[in-house]
Image (cartoon, rainbow, N blue to C red; front, side, top):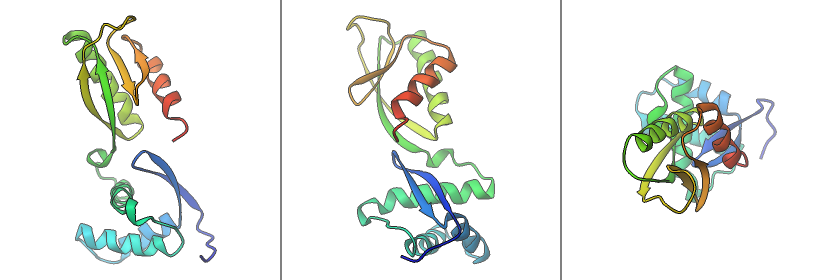
Length: 160
């Protein structure tokens, strides 16, 4: 691997924060290449980035999604369709409170460029419902302010 003075940028690949050397330079190169096909642009970006970064074959597709998101961000386009998916469970009875909770959750996760894939479950195991559960851990319990909800989510993913 050769040294580069272009610095390192951190991006979200799947659910992991990854540092990439030369991302800005690779994006500039892709802009100047005159390519219009998404796959061709991504092939060029991956090839360029692979010169200074390890991109595991098993993670190639999540890398392509993350790099495309960065390409769109640079162009000022909508990146929301390319947010990283995260599986979550919302526990609690159907109704207005759960709907409000889900709306808040989607908004907060959007701040972290995450798209929740929601499974619904019955509540009732004591404590306030609805609840947000990720990897069998309750992250948020009951209706809360947006600030409080966001803080709880941030604490649960801060090591990403």
